[in-house]
Length: 273
Image (tube, rainbow, N blue to C red; front, side, top):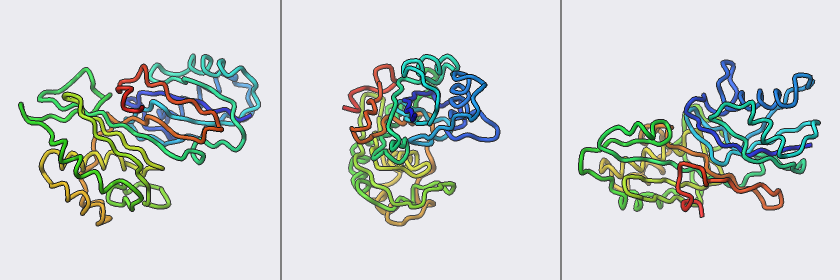
């Protein structure tokens, strides 16, 4: 049978999603927990497919994976049983048996990322590694209106080469952004970006470039110039991973994939209504 799992994790301690020879990735811990749950007698270790390969330090509220297995257990047992073998910074939040045509990666038609940024005049240890922190001089504020004016050029289908990591393995730099919201709540700024797919470091590079505008270092028109140039060297440096969350992955309704449970998350639930 094919089983889909919903995951949440704090990515601060992990070296990203994808398995590596040195271990310490989300996939490594999850696949070991699955093997421990079903027993060492399993002939073929369970191999997982993910909706999004998050980078080192990036978190997930609504990550989705699938795997194939001959082990027949109640779905709730997959939740409780696998969680018993996972570190406290990871959790399976739901399990569903799905049809064989479901693929966690290729069945997804959209992904939503959220970047949580705290602006402060001093370091913020209570949100360390859970949110980005931008230190500003006392009394200085980000120009959110300028960022709002700049973001419009990013909506739609574009070649996002200017915001693509040199290590990106995507076959094409052309992606579609459906929505980009910038929400200001006191000292907090939330960037909510929904698209069909994303390049390696794309969200963090977009956030860094929007902040360049918000800090007054460039005008709102600068962002469109960078986008059109298709030149990574013109965009801002990659922003820190700490505040980035894979918040939601969208699938056709007939697969029955649950919406992510954001109630116990660090982010305001109103951002995803």
